[in-house]
Image 1 (cartoon, rainbow, N blue to C red):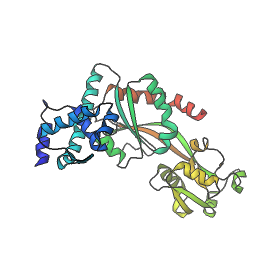
Image 2 (cartoon, helix red, strand yellow):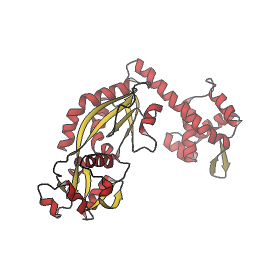
Image 3 (tube, rainbow, N blue to C red):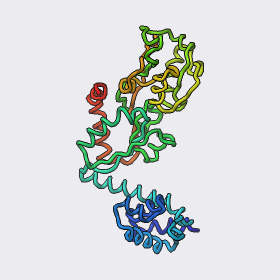
Image 4 (spheres, rainbow, N blue to C red):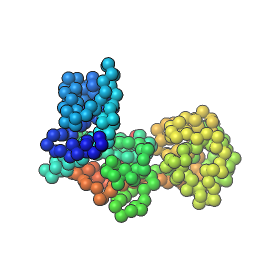
Length: 319
């Protein structure tokens, strides 16, 4: 079978390197050797030469040439996940070996929600990059898979989340800051001039709600539950997954909504309305899996985030 043959040949350490397989992966993504060369900062003949070397090594065509077009062969499709594993492991090994020498370099993969990724984390990343310029950071917002599963697999090294619970011993969770979620209304709404409202009055207005799988929905719904209410009881005619879109819709008078206070302070022209006896607080925490292989770069990033959290929080709130 092609799969067994490719797996056996990938295990032949004398013939392959991660660089060649990375070239293949970029070529497989672009299906164009010229575009792959541009992305890799190589010449097109050099890319073609590496692909031919791989095809000779495997004894299989990885691409089918059709004039100027390329499509992946069966062998090429089988090779993609195996090559991804090979390249990832090679990167991890190089980073681990660099760590033994005390070098602070490598790559850090981070998962977060959209709000923290847009309004909070850039301040952390900017200062960390200034101190450690040889560390690259990849930040994914709202990943399709379970973020905790990606931590377990090693695809993510850290997770910034509002819903972190140390449900398993392998996860270490540290709370970084607390942020308030507020009720927002158009500036000309009658509630905009009131000192506060009763929680029961929420049932009398139209709402633009966040997506049910969002952190904001979870936190607001949990807070309302303490008053024997839920978001499902509100008169909602529109659901939006984008926090800024909710604020802009409120600005236009389409209804009321809930938003993290840090966003409303950035996007003006909405009024915040206190709810008597109800304060909605969400915590932002950083999570890591202590069973995963670590590096000097990752340890340094973790220590930096924990140490600098108060200073950076003040910078964020002043912005």
